[in-house]
Every structure is written in structure tokens, then in C-alpha cells.
Image 1 (cartoon, rainbow, N blue to C red):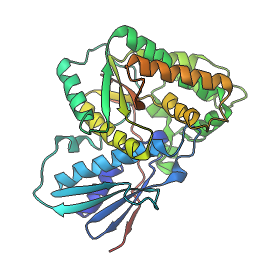
Image 2 (image 1 turned 30 degrees about the vertical axis):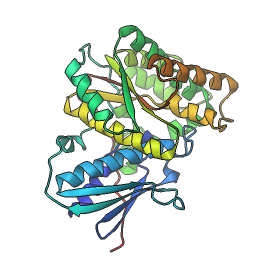
Image 3 (image 1 turned 180 degrees about the horizontal axis):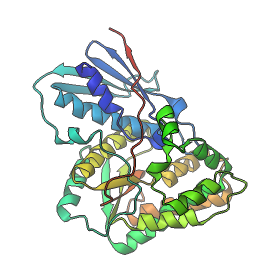
Amino acid sequence: MNDIEKIITAASFAPSGENCQPWRFSVQNEEISLYNVPERDYSLYSWGQRASCIANGAALENMLIAAKHFGYAGNVKILPDQNQYNLIAKISLVKTNATKDSLFDFIESRCSNRKPYKKISVTDTQKTLILEAGNSFPEARVVLADDAATISHLAEVASVNEKILFENFYLHEFFFNHINWTLEQELKNKIGFYTKTLELPPPALFMFKLCKSWKRQKIKLIGKANEQVYKSAPIMGVVVIPSDSAEHFVCAGRALERLWLTVAKLNLSLQPMTGVLFLMLKIKNNDAEKLSPEHQKLVKYAYGEIARSFKQENGQIAMFFRIGVGGSPSAHATRLPPEINWLN
């Protein structure tokens, strides 16, 4: 594997919704083009491919970290061609001296950890490092919350997503059609949710399987159980950007990845809680006809409470997450080999 393949392989370990991995690459000489693959992201949560913009921004950041590691400077142009909407970025590599970025060692091990977090505080030093990592870009801003009352309220608000997920036919069907129930399915598909990564104890897993049939499932306990899991976090945070433009969401992805890799380096865990944010984008952009009026009202309430809790009523909240000590996750999502078109 040559250096460029190694750099692109690092990109493929970026986070993405439903582990959809919405990227492909082309290489010409020393230039890598990063493309979004829109057909990978078609759930009801998707508006304007903004979730995939975050995923591709994280992939881009991984590439730049890896490029330094292998002795290249990366000159980046974000959304360089208005006529190619899916062309996310071009990275021109220039050979230089290798520069060790301590975050490189955590690219492959970084993952979502959905376990309940231990009752261990995140130190002020750790918070400072997390904030510094997330605030590395002028277009993105990270804000953290750590008081118990706010965390408890945000946990309740975050669980609104589960209520809607299990009540809305379109969200429910998409979600359960992307579940890998066995390791064999996970290794075959390499995309979607592997049940072990959901961190469900046996009783909850049994109820979860009952919910597979939308007509049969009327269980509210899963949302309540998730609320309790969310409450276990000592801190929660958001990534805020100036607007809902694709460029700003790519920047949010870059900020998120640096923050998340720093969390991994600190031996902490992170779980995104983004459902409400992306449903709000659809409502805001008049694309929510598949959401009932009741669910739209719930989304607006939940988004408003998140914005109010972090005092970010005027910004666009791109990411919402919890951080804590979760220990080792039960499983990691499997990755597809990156699709590379060599143009040399």
C-alpha cells in the first residue's frame, strides 16, 4: 500500500450516520479528490446531504492528519467546483518532512460508545483539551455543559428522537432495514448498524427485536432506557456553525473529528445524539411532509431546548453529543474498503 492509499484508508475510518460511509476518492498525480456518494444517505433524517457533509468533513480531517504523518503537507480546497455538487474537497499533497500528529494513532480506534458512562467526572484539563481541539477552525465553535440539571434535561430532550423513530413509519422502516443482527451479516454488509454496537442488554435487545414490526411495536420503554443512558454522561456538547450551508457542515465534520480523536486520546468515550438536529433541518427547509404535525412540534421543542441550554439560539447546531468514561465498546462498526479511482 503506497502513501496515498494509506492516507485515503485513514479517511475511511471517519464516523457517518448509520455507518453509511458516503465517500469515494479519485487520485491524479499528488491530488486527492473527495466525493460525496448521495445514494448512501437517503433516510428521512437527510436534508441536503448535510449529515454526509459532516461525515466527509471528518474523512477530510483524517486525511490531513495522516498526510502529515506520512510526510506531506495538504493544501485543501473545500467545495471547489459549483458545477460538481458532490465534489467535497480537493487535497493537493506536497512532500515535506513527516510531522507526528498524536491524533493519528487514534483514527482507527475512535468509535461511538453507546454504553452507560461511569460516574467519573471529566477533569478541567480534559475539558480544555477537548475545547481546544473542537475550536481549531474559525467556522465552528464547541460549547460544553456539565451541570447535572442541564444534563438531565438534555437527556430527556435527546430521547425525543427515539419516540419519533419508533412512531414514524419511514424512520422505523429505514432504521430496521439497516440493522445487522449477526456478526455474519455485519461482515457481509459492512454498512448499517451492528446490534452489538447498540450496547443493548439482553432484556432490551429482546424488546428491540419485538419492535422490528412497526405494526406490533408500541413499546415506550426503549426511549426511557436511552434517556437514562444519556443521563449517565458527565458532560454534553454541541458544535455550532454560522449557517446550514454545505461548506459550514463540512467544517463541522472536521471540528467534530479533531474533538472526537482527542476524546479517544484521553481514554474517554463519545456518542453523537443528532436525530433531532437533522429533523429540524428538514422542518426549517420545508421538507418535513413525512413528519406528523405532532412530531414536528416535538422536534421544534427539542431543538429549541438544546439551543437554549447551550445559549446558542442564533447559531446552527450541527452536532450534539455526550462524553464520559464508557470503557471498551462491545464492538466496532465494520468498514468498506475505500473506493479509489486512479486517474494517473
